[in-house]
Every structure is written in structure tokens, then in C-alpha cells.
Picture 1 (cartoon, one colour):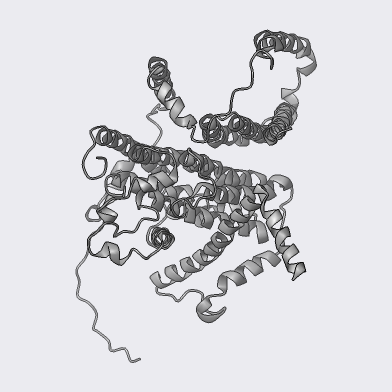
Picture 2 (picture 1 turned 120 degrees about the vertical axis):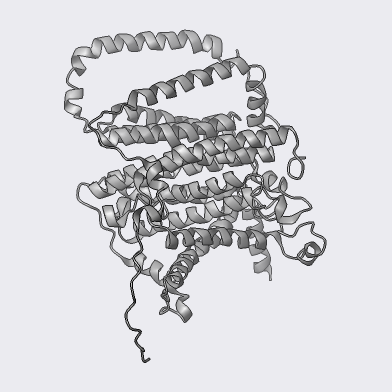
Length: 205
Length: 354
């Protein structure tokens, strides 16, 4: 067993363990933190697959931003686990059916008949100067230019919609105009009063 | 003699393992860094002391030189108090999550040409990713403490760090466009030229330089952006409940982060290990003998001084003003300047990009 293979199994074991914990822990904050661990392990696996850009971006975007906001929300919510689990037994058959369909679909798509080791041989390791970031960038901005731009526009629309939904001004709420506050000058607020000073005293040291 | 020879052979045999070599290199980076952190706290107390017409620590050792050591020993012997109903595991992991990324980022940091632990292509991305992971320490500490003040501090800190990360990332995009590489060593080499310190990126990327540094101050939760601590509003924010060594680790993490941000500012905008007189007719040869490491250290200390100076000068920002600065001022400026830099690079504007 090579060192890479050993590392792969370590990361894979941690990933499966963390993913299991995500759906079995009672405390939602613990679940979210295990999801972070799962992201880290999959980033490790992607690093082993020589996709360092994707691995680092996974940590940067999902661990560094998305999961922080997730935790932010989950920590503030007072989740009542008992009511959430109320319909567990009643919904179990439907859940199992969906699970079965999902596993079947995954088996059809990525089963051993299509993705087996004899179907797809292990890729040859890239030389040391191989730059995954540059390679991705060169195809992203040439071959896949239009899909990339369309995805960017869709995200922009989502941003505008999200801001539009939250930016509602109600007449009765009070708000501060920060630009005006920041640009205030001392002359507007402070008046210097000139008056005769007191008699100067000699201080003996 | 035989014994010494066999001992030497044993040492050589152990050294032949790559893991051992890497571990030794890590210790070679972390030990001086920890010493720097200790004396950075001393420098902060002394400098702010003099700025506020005080003397600062001057009792332990000559001129107070042993104060950081005394503080460390004191913190080590203090009791570690676990709050009732705190999540014990997370409570103790949180300080390590603050310190860990701050130390791990040094792996890709070039100290001199070629003198780097891991010379990876995507060094800049790696640093950005680790900087974004650092927020977990504060967030988890606030939640696991089971205290409303700690929780408020954590919430403030999370929102602030997420907001400033974007401006920081965009500033780094500008550097990456200007240098044409994500490798930190290559970024420094792209700043070398014949005009000394005028060749560095701080001049063509001046807005990004300022924004990166200010975002760095916000990212490390330092004054004037220290709403996460806000001792006059929420006691001490996320680390109210911490005592003894876990508190010390938080402290180490904060200062290690400050040194890291200073060093990265130097690498990306102030020419890293390059001499400020490089290529100048008279001064250039005069300072040729100074090793690059000294320049790096001096520049980092210079930028680090600004952290302390800012803290002594400015009052704490109000929370909504922090958000306004991050989202409405910094992000638009960075986007505009990335465009400017892009045009400069494409049309090979003279002096820096030709």
C-alpha cells in the first residue's frame, strides 16, 4: 500500500464518519461542525487527486464562508429536537423508499459497471510543475466562457433578489444615515467659546 | 569515539526520513515565531505605554524584558475554569482552532529566495483559505462558553470576518493579476527591479495595499475593529469565560495572526525580502551585504508597528459603520482597482508591468 493510498483511506474513513455524525447527532451545532470536518476530509481527497485548486476553494468557500453563516443561524435558533423527531416512525417507510430509489440511481450512474477500476484506469501522476489553477483557468475562460458567464449572471440575479427582499424600509422604523454621520465636521457640532483665561499661576516643582 | 560515530550515524538515519526533516523545519519556523509573539506583546505594551505618556512594564528583568516570560509562566499555572453546562470538548478546541491556522499559514511563507517549507503553486489561495478558517475558533468559543456575552462577541466577529474576507480576497486578486502567479516567492520576484522600493506593488496597487492592511486589522479583531471583544460593551466578548492556558492560546493566536498579516503585507506589497535600495546607483551596492531575511524582518516589524499605533490612536468603530466600510467602501474600490490593474497588465503599462 503506497502512502497516497493510506492517506486516501484515512481521509475517506474520516469523511464517512463525519457524514454519519452529521445526520445522527441530536445537537444541530454539532452536526454543522461535523459537516465542516467532512468538507475538510473531502478537500484532502481532492488534494490527493491533484485538484489543489478545487480542494482549497472548497475550504475557502464552504468551510470559510457558507458553513460559518450556517453555524451563525443554527447557533441562534433554539431547535426543539423532540418536535422535529415527532413524525419519525410515521415517515420512515417513505424515507426508506426514497433512500432505495436514490441508491439505485447512484448504482446505475456510478456503479462498478461504469466506474470500475478496469473501466477507468488510474490517471498517470502529473509532473511537479503541473499547475491545476492555471489549467482550470485556461479552459474556464476560453472553452467554457459562455456557461461561466451565464452562471455569473444567475448568481448576480440571486444577489440582487436577496438584497431586494431584505431591503424594505418601513416608515415607522428609525435608521441612521451613516454617510452623513461619517462626513460630519467639528464645525457643525462644536462651538469654540473664547473667553479670558484665568490668571496664570507659578507651579513650584 | 566509536560511540559518537554510531550516534552520528543514528542521527543521519533519522534525518533520512522526510517526515523528520519536515518536523524539524516546522520547529525551526514555530519556535522563533513564538518568541516573536512573546516580544510583540511586550513591544505593544511598551509602545502604547509611551504613546500614552506611561512607562509600560518595567519591573520584571532589566527594563521589563522578562515580562512576557513571566506572563507566560503565570498563565500556565492558573486554573482552567470550565463554565457550567459549557461544551467541554468544543470549549477547549476553540483556542487551538484560532492558533492552528495562524501557524499553518507559515508553511508557504518564503523567508528568502527558495527558503520555504512548502513551495506550492497555489500559495496565495492556501493563505486565504486558512485565514477564513480562523473564524471558527472565535465562533466555537462564543457558543461553547454558554455565556450571552461570549455569544454576542462571536456573532459580531463572525459577521465582521466574513465581510472583510471579501475585500481581502479582492485585494489579493489584484496582487495576483499584477504578479501573474499565486506562488508567494514569485510574487516577491515580480516586484524586483532597478528602482528600489518604487518597484514594489505598494505604489501601483496603493488602494489595494491600504484595503488589505485595514481588512487585516479587522480580520484579526484588533482595535479599532475589536467589537468581538468590546470590553466596554460585552465584557471581553468571546473569551470572557476563558482563563489560564486556553486564554493564553487565544492571545498567542491573535498576535501570531497579527504577525502573519504584517508579513503577508510585506510579501505582497512591500517587496518581501528585497532590499529597498535594490538597483539604485549608490545606495544599492552599499546595502548589498544585508541578507534578505533582515529586510523581511525589518519590514514586518514596521508594518506590525502600525497595528500597535492604530490601537493607541483610534476609538472603536461602531458596528454598523464597520459593515458600511467593508461592504460599501472597500469592496467597490477593490473591484474598480482590479479593473485598472487588469488594463495596466494587458497594455503593459511602463515601470511595473512592462
